[in-house]
Structure formats: structure tokens, C-alpha cells
Length: 287
View: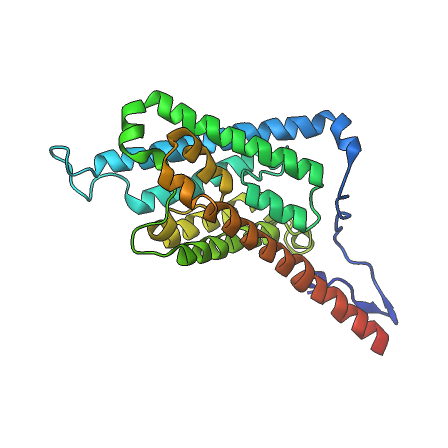
């Protein structure tokens, strides 16, 4: 149990905690611009987001075609269904985070990058370049999906996110905020260095809970918004499909995820982790 606390009293003194918190990232780190590691990470984010959009958009289009009852022999129960779409998104995130975590951190999502910036995990320069790379990767991924299946892409609206009929924009915004909170909170918890003090294998498994978080949020919010929780995922198809409805609703898929990510970062970093430090300080002052 000694590893579950940040410090413990031994002979009137506190022993050092057995895990290392990395120092907060600087707001501006111009030295990063001279390092190949930054550009390698940006490339990794671009490629990962491209692959993410390509696979997931084609999954949506494939399901739409297989369940299209206007095609002879098809029924609404054909195809992978909503469950399969949720698995495609969650599974791809699991795979891509596993592949890129050691290079770029495996963000693959501007909201995750923004949340980590708010939590002082990345600098402003790195966050900006990541978000640009993710958006460009999403555009290219959606473009590849359209290039390979142009007729189906146009017919089934290219996997574009819009607010579903019967739901207000306020409801959709709330769904995006809470859904992104779940995702970013999971990211912070799964990558918390304090976990290595208790279970050294946990960081290796970090992509698994992150992928499951994406999967679960999709199950809850596909009927409402089609599930964004990732501004790049919503932006890429909107650019390629270029539909008025998609652009009218686009702000929801940016404002919601960014609010949810910021709240998750503040909650984890400054309330959960901060509370432990305050409690320890109070204990010391009363000793």
C-alpha cells in the first residue's frame, strides 16, 4: 500500500514519492522548432489521422450501403450496424495510439491535444502544429475514401457529422462536451505517471482504455450527433463532402470537444492531482 500515496512518514520525515512527474511543458519552446523529433511527431500525427479517417469513413459508407433498403436484397439489419461503427472508431484509436504513442504521444485528435496543452503536457507550438497536422490528415483521409469509392461517398454523405433530426443544437453540444470529457479524462488517467508507482504494466495498456472510451462514447452519441469528440474527424469529411448542413453544425464539433477537453484537463490535473498535494501539505503543517 506504500506505493499508493505520494509520500509516507518514516521516523518523523517523509520519504520521496516513488514516481516521477514530468515538469510542466513551457508555453513557448522555440528550441523545439530546431529538433527533428518535433517534425517526426507531426508527421506521425498526420499519417495516423489520415488512416483513422480513411478506415472509419469507409466503415460508415459500407454500413450505409449494406443497410440501404432501396437496394434489392438489403435490409436495415444488414451491415456492421451502429455497434460495428463504434468498434471501428474505438479499435482504430487503440491501434493508432499504440503505434504512435512513443513518437508523438498518439493524440490523433485536436481536442486531446488541446486538453494536454491545458494540462501543461505540451507546448503551444507543439499543440498548434499537431492540430494543423491532424486536420490536414483528416482531409486527406476523407479524400482517399472518396477517391476509392466516389459514387458511394457522395450517395451516403461521406461520413459527415451533423446533428440528427429531433435533437436540438444545445443537446448536441452537451453530448459533445460530455463525450469528449470522458475521452480526455481517460487519456489523463491512463497516462498518469503515478500509475507506474503501483502497476508498472499500466502505461503499456494505456491505448486499451482510450480505445474503449471512444467505443463507449460512440454507442451513446451516434444517435445524437454521429459522434464527433474529435474536431479533425468532423472537419475532414465536411471539407471533402462540402455540404451546407455539415458546415452549419460544424461549430458544435469544435466548441463542444474543446470545452469538454479543457474541463477534463482541469478536473484531473488541478483537482484530482492537486487535491493530493494539498492534503499532504495540510498533513505536514499539522504534524
